[in-house]
Length: 227
Image 1 (cartoon, rainbow, N blue to C red):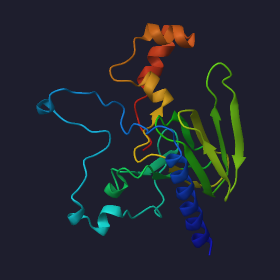
Image 2 (image 1 turned 120 degrees about the vertical axis):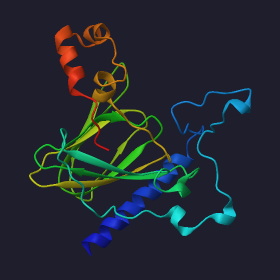
Image 3 (image 1 turned 45 degrees about the vertical axis):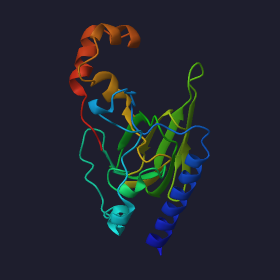
Image 4 (image 1 turned 90 degrees about the vertical axis):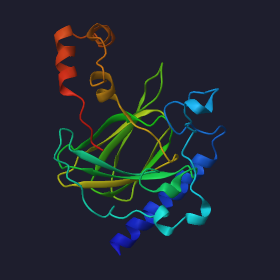
């Protein structure tokens, strides 16, 4: 019964994410850039993916298996994000929806501050206790946060920095629906301190008001991913 209720919650979450996506007043971009070209011979990249001939569509184009399997959270932040987007289910192309499973280690497992440039996220907790929140845009930068328990749902508005942390003593699991087939993710610490090539330390020293050596140390620490 518990598993049945959990999957009903996930399906309801996906339905709501789909509504969020279709109510947008302007189509969302499906990748970071879509640079226009005048000569198609030099290359073509559409806003999304090319479509398979409908005559050759199969059930496997709309199928993914394995979200019931717990993930290994033994990494520096203590969390793993398992995405199910258009790269895993080709049938999601143009559908404006995707899903993730997030596993959190006990005692502080963290999905660190990040943003989805192309999607609103709606998250439901299946197991454990999560402290979650997002930060509003300038100039207020107001933190909106709450502690969630199994069955609780929380929404992270599109583009805003947000996070989740396991504040319990046991593993935690959440599912989240996103209003894009390819929501994108920018993990703040990784992007700022782990960019390739690195941002000039002088820029970060001034921006964060840190000693230059501290910035260089932080740049040596980042670059890993939890998904």
